Length: 128
Image (cartoon, rainbow, N blue to C red; front, side, top):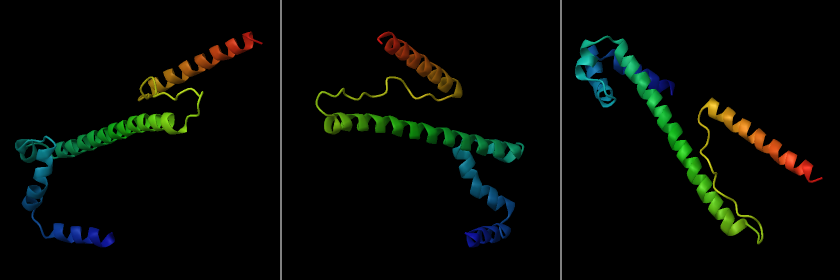
């Protein structure tokens, strides 16, 4: 790993700025930066484009992970109901609402769960 860094550093030291710019230009064009922005605008703009790209990739990765969770839930629920459920046992069901994504949604979900548990406890205690 250290050798890779040294090789990159050595290869960069032998290149001109124009050669380096021409090497990285396709990446910046692919993430939406124009040729004029790359060459004529402030250098900081390239950094911001790269940061925006990293944020988009991170969000995309999170969405793909979430999609995997939904697929996992669907398959595991189906397999459980077909192969693991005993006769007379209630079938397992797919989640009735989406996973919470923000802290606000998580708090609302927790409050609803607490309220549901309190309602169940009241019903149970009233039957005693």
